[in-house]
Length: 491
Ligand SMILES: [Zn+2]
Image 1 (tube, rainbow, N blue to C red):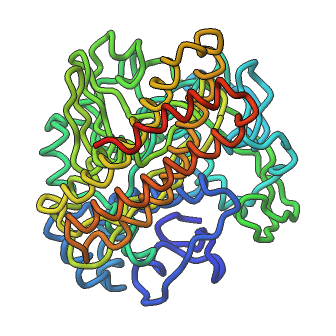
Image 2: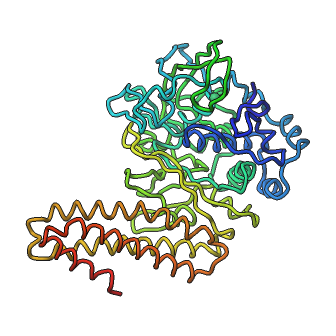
Image 3: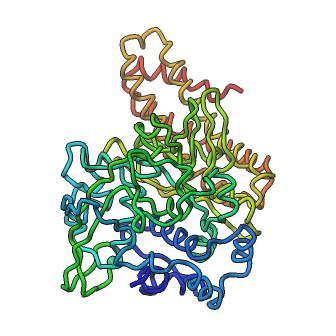
């Protein structure tokens, strides 16, 4: 099986190849049980398309406008190194000491599932039986997920952190169809090299062909193709000739994979503390927004389970500068400004919310994007700002309530109600903001802002009222909350 040629992608219309998705007019939808696998698959397919076409920014514009013909695909197959993408070797480097490595169940590389091998590893699903076996096609997306998205802590001391860093979120361009989505996240080699400051002599062949050497992996020496499929482990999968119903894609297969072996690489990327201390530098991963702080780059991660993506949406689209850090959008979002045509696009924000090795939540949010980001970004910023204003109003309402003389003894209770209420607001605002931005292109700025102010103020007041009702029998507390409410009626 070759990932550039054969049918390994699970869709609602059966298994198809990357070629079929890109060269036909049929609209395919990915079909996987877990949204994180789906998110990984989108990244894997765009990375494969990048390795296949290695397009310039003008090639990419043409693909986005006119699509890819079967002939073009065939030509690209001849010039790329298609043997790198054979399923027997893809992303599976061999340990130099010929060590077999540690064996683990396949469920440990679906990051939502509890692995049970490390004290701080737990997942969103406690039932390990949800993934007992996979087909031989799905191991590739799981392997990619292991290297790109799973935190090293998951495997305790035997875990390694990959090129992106642990728990990094992804922002992808989501097009009107799967084909458009894959092409929108395909990387233009010329523009990328200019942005990422990769050295001219950087190694571009993948790490299963030429493994990493040494203790520090210098970012400037890692070429685009090498970095897109960067490894942190030597892995091998144990295939058995038995029939299985795949727990990842749901297809029947006559080959089964239930476990794999892994051994971590010994050096460090600039995405880890050791790597940063050794000045390895951050490798510009095209799907991750980054924070520049204290002269170092960090991937953006989802902070805790109450985190919602809308709060930082504007910084993922246009970036943001605060007093002590700068947030830059993912490379792929910047590239989109240069390649976008008029078709409707959205921003997909996805990833795990991880605390050490534990997964405490997951993000998979879609936001409509203005087609011309540079001219219309203020529309997004204004809506987000209104959202944050009402979050702040809630906070101030509780502050005012706490000033009531009777409230000194109830400070702790009030504090915990305050945090709960804000979290509820942040969660509910997510959907409201997504909906307001749905027609971002068709509406003027003031209209969007007015709608946001109206809907979000109603929501903030409604949540606050619910709290008041809950404590109406505690008269001193109730009175204090009523006093706090006046915040909502002040300018
Ligand atoms: Zn499968």
